[in-house]
Image 1: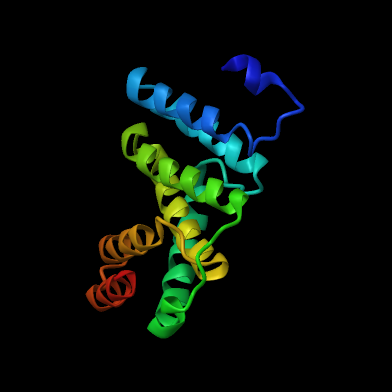
Image 2: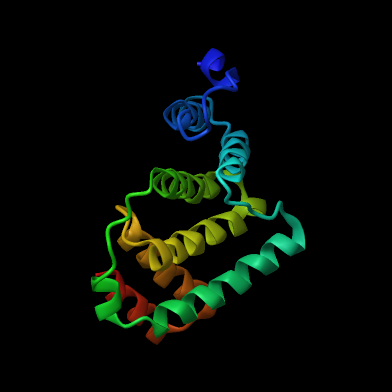
Length: 166
């Protein structure tokens, strides 16, 4: 496993399966959620998807991203969502899968990392709107609706986003 990851002639995208197995082992077997998140963030960065690393800046960016993404979804007619193409770019598919893992891991990594789950969710929704439908598009829209309810306290917005997820 480490031999393949060490080979520079193999791209990060080609190593994706091994990285995912390593992240899953770290999180599910070794219970090293923070380490798994850091590895996930490093891989995402190599694939061109960067996240702020903690602190007030990370939290502020998460809330700005939440508001911006909610606005984008509310302004997107259902007909447009229904007509989105199915995403097929291997790089985008890999990023979406890693964002989903990042979102899941943040629940176990501690309160300090909650903002990463929010950023991962908003990024997944933004990718859906810009790149097309992914296997996780409806899930990410549903999560955005839930977060908008919990963070913003807006029932109507949560319902609107939930309807678009369907």
